[in-house]
Image (cartoon, rainbow over all chains, first blue to last red; front, top):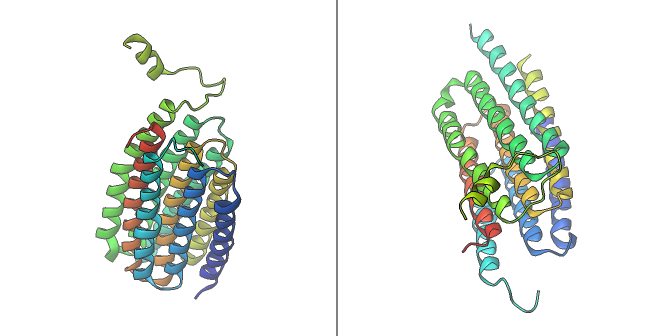
Length: 85
Length: 112
Length: 86
């Protein structure tokens, strides 16, 4: 692992923690929380790639950042208008 | 010869990431959603394409894969920005007072 | 020489990443955050290409291809949600 990769890893790790905190505590709005959770997945996938695991990174990007976010938005569009938030 | 190609590739990489930097700067500085879409997709599309060209100069063996990524970005990025701008307009995103021309609203008012 | 240029490019991409992240945190509406998410995905593609160049492993580019697909589909789905579709 070269110097550049270590710096990128550290930046990504700090950003991942920040995005996770935002998914929990940001604005108390569901779309923002879903987007922040997608961001956590995206950054974790780049982190896996930098740790030399391209197959894990591909799976995480396709399922964690792709499918889960789309499914959440799909369900949120269907259940909109419920009585309890 | 290969030295020259390396230097050209490195300069293309730096130029492409500089365009990414300008796109990020526009994303922070612009006043409303539509201007941010404009800055955030046009500049980053050009920047990514330049970066992929630079990587092709540095490693010519990866050319096909990089060309595939570039072609895909070139097709899908304008489409997604247009869909997003239409969705922002329909969901009533606020315009700043500097955004004076709105052709979509004029069209909708003309034929209801 | 080339290593130095790649480092400079990584520095530019990192600053662009932080700027887009600022907009993601600050953005007043959901559309702002979607634009910032799209830009973050595209900057990640550039970061992956730079990492592949540094390590010299071409297999990393497959992940970049998945990312290109992902940014498109994500924006389409969120735009449908914002329009009130589904």
